[in-house]
Amino acid sequence: MTFPFTKNIHYQNQSLSIEGCSIEALALKVNTPFYVYSQARLLDNITACKAAFDAHNIQIHYAVKANCNLHILQLIASQGIGVDLVSGGELYRATKAGVQAEKMVFSGVGKSRSELIQAINMHIGQFNVESAEELALLATLAEDTSDNTSRKLQVALRVNPNVVVNTHKNITTGQKGNKFGIDMDLALTLFEHYANHPSIELVGLAMHIGSQIFEVAPYREAIQKLRLLATKIQEKGGNVSVLDLGGGFGINYGENTPLDFATIAHVIAEETKGFRGKVAVEPGRSLVADIGLLVSRVNYVKESHPTPFLILDAAMNDLMRPALYQASHPIKEVIQNTTSATRSYDIVGPVCESTDIFASKYPLDTNIKAGDLVTFFCAGAYSAVMSNSYNSRDIVPEVFVNGQNATLVRERITQEALLQYEVNAKPL
Image (tube, rainbow, N blue to C red; front, side):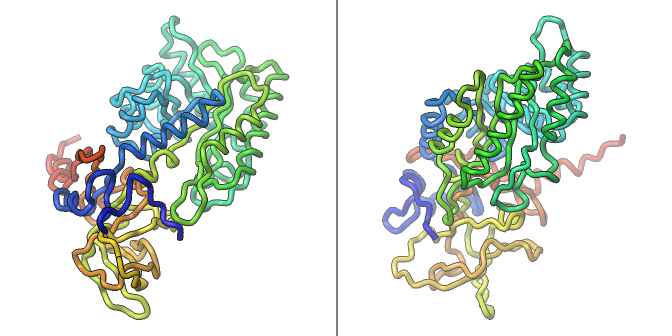
């Protein structure tokens, strides 16, 4: 495994630090487990992303589902980046973070009536529609809420290009049989049917073929299919002025070479050459994954044959990815192992589920003991955002670091706080 250290997350005097803050010192102030993020790393990632895509006039919309912490959204908004949303809750958060409505794209396969009305009233920039049924509802709602002064709703059809991606089966989204997107032939029909609608305007095509994509070939194939469909639509008199090309760019969890922004931007530029319109991407994980750590303390070292168990105070409710996708997160001791003597452990949490396991036969310090701290790397994406209170466990806090300054940006959500929603029963 190639360990994904960065200049912002490193050992200093044999103790792990994030920017100018010692993880050990933070753990004394914030009880474990907790998440901690590097502001400098996030800004570096945003800078690299903008440099790659701005050079080809490709717009950027951050996929909020990767990490929706308000502090992170505010920083992203301050850099002029738009957002890709998949729920009314994310729309609310993005609004609170100061994202301009015209920079919002509302995606998602199952938007409710109330969510669509919320987005219509917000005058967001674009709807990515994923079914003929959703488009019919959106058209009806648009007519019902029209004030005859605002422009038509701008709509792109998310299509399913049926492209095979070499990734985990639970995070493929662009193959036949996935719930996402519209059949490409149906998209052509819908452009014709809604050509002269008074309240909505079909302006483009969207796609997202999956997550953790490390090869450009399937991405290139999907763009080519989108361009071919756009040509057919235009030949029949339709207007395709937007190509929304999704995200899913693979990052290094210690086992792969990342698919960097410059490479993706080059492929997009090649495959959209001659297209007269807006081209956009929706990176999420690739902006925030490597900014974050999950910090945990060892509860027990349980001797067992053939492999001892390292039982942590973090569990699957705090970090769901290993249980959901059999994902691997690099794990390191907070106090550096200077002897290099290691032992293999099965690293698990305390939740009463057999799937509460983070890693099998994982090498860590042979002398690690109860009370020691360990960290999960690349925990900035799809980690805290998925956390929950299963087994009546607290929802863990989040900390944001800027240089030597650390800020608590989500408090621990305790059982006492959660019970407030249960004790005050109300008759219906």
